[in-house]
Structures are given as structure tokens and as C-alpha cells.
Length: 335
Image 1 (cartoon, rainbow, N blue to C red):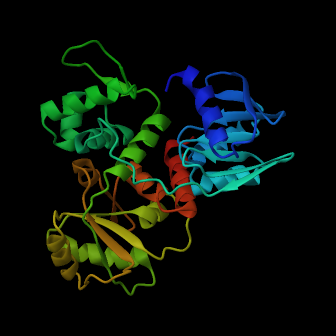
Image 2: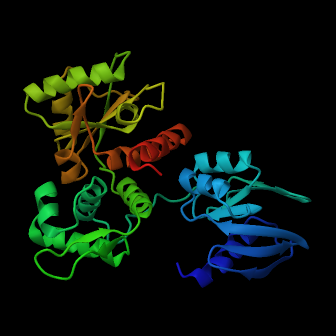
Image 3: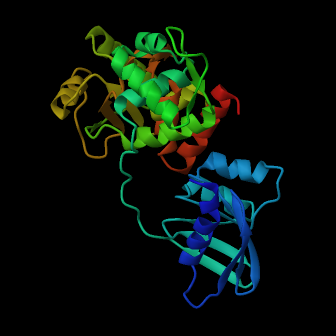
């Protein structure tokens, strides 16, 4: 988004949650913030981008002065709670808001947004390359082919797409050793996670389990799948609890498995004595990318998805899931 569009976007988002009779006037702005007057009451507002927990924490812990209100595309539940606890109001572009300043008090739920469409340019191949890069792969066509087993054309196209999106930078001149490096790891991770959620496999089944310890239960199932030659990998809260312990109550589990249809997933569930059941605590899905399967690692008896995929899956499971996702990012990425 061009920086000169942000003040207008901030004003529009705030105006949308106020009654029509309220007088609003913008007084200056820059690439991140704007000063507004609401019925003569000054209000400093700041753009928070995607509106995730990480952005909210960065705003609160930053050196610059805090705004009265933060505005985002869609503020996550964890970000809302964090901003409110810090005394900062918030607004997002679904029309949801919570502002309490002087005589100005606003509390709105907003409109239920339509499910997000798949971000342009992000394909399964681009997701696979991004996953490989976030796991430390070097941004050359040769290295990406070794990691992902994608064709040279697909790897070249995906790297070019990420560069066109400003997520990669050239590391060497064109030629056989040409490489690209990540421009901003946090930005790549955020955009990858958003795209991964939009490309979540549509096919899944929920199965009933009786375990008390999800790690031990999934490890036992995994051994049975291994004996049957069925690739699998754990994601979500259970993967997060092994990679970067944070959550203490692991009521459910998520597993990616080698199966393209609902019938195939049911057959693979039957291999370990499970059957589909409404509200089942274990969800089985097809692998979303080739990298998710190829970069799976074994820890605590579990085959785990690559950490960026676990992060992406955790981030969409509510407040506690987003907190666990940020803990995972900080543990592995370090900031």
C-alpha cells in the first residue's frame, strides 16, 4: 500500500465505526499514522497492517509514543485483548472497534467477513518454496529443487514470484550461481502464513480418539502408519508443544497424511483403528505442499511438520493458538 494512502485509510476506518452526525477531521499524517479530530477531540491513530498479535506487541513495546487507536485490516482476537489491556483502542476494516477516550466511547462487533480468497500469486509451489526458504534453504533454483523436488520451471517461477512481491532480494548476479535471500523474515513468515491459511486443503475428516496424552497417542498411531508405509506429519498445537512448549491443555490434534480424497483419509484412519465422527478430536488432512512432507522431522516419537507450517496452523486457532504461534516464532526465529 502506498504510504500516502494510509492516512486516508485510517480516517475512513475510524469514520466507519462512528455515527454519521460525528464531525471528523484529519490533521496531517505520514506513512503509518494520522492525527484526527473527533468532535474536536484529538485522536492519534496508527496503522497496524494485518493486525496480528506480533504487530500489537511491537506497537506496545516500541520506542515511539503509543497512539490512542490502532487500525488494521482485521484485528485478531489476541491483538484486540493485548491492545485493550495496554489502554489502546482499536478499529479494523470489518467495522469492529473498541475505543474509550474522553467522551468518545465506541464498542462494535463489526460485520462477519467473507472467507478470504486465495492471495494472488500464492500457489502451492510458491508456498512450498517459501516454506523451504524459511527453514534455511538457499534461494537458488538448484537448492530449491533438491529440497522440494519441484521442476526447474516451477522453482524458478516461484522464486521470481517471491522476488516480485518484494519478499526476496538478489544475492548474486544472474548465472548458474544466482541466488536470492529473504528481504525480511518476519514479513515473509506473515505473508506465507496468511496464504497458507487461505490454501488450507478443503478435504479433511475428524476422527474420534480416546487418548489422555496426545503426544503418546499420536506417536503410537504414527508407528502404525510407518509400518504401513503411509507418510504423515503432526501440526497445530501438538507440534507446537514439542517444538516450543507453551500450551498445557492439548485437547485436539492435527495430522497431515498422504491422501488426496476423503475416502483415502478414511482408509488411512482405519489403518490405526479410527473412524470418522462428528466433533472428533483428531483432524486428518492431505499434505498442503510437497515441502510440508519432505521437511518433516522426528522429535519425541512424532514426525512434525516444518516449523513455519506449524506456526501458520497455530495462528488460526484462536487467542491461545496465536499466542503459542508467536512463542514458536520467537523460540526458533529469535525475534
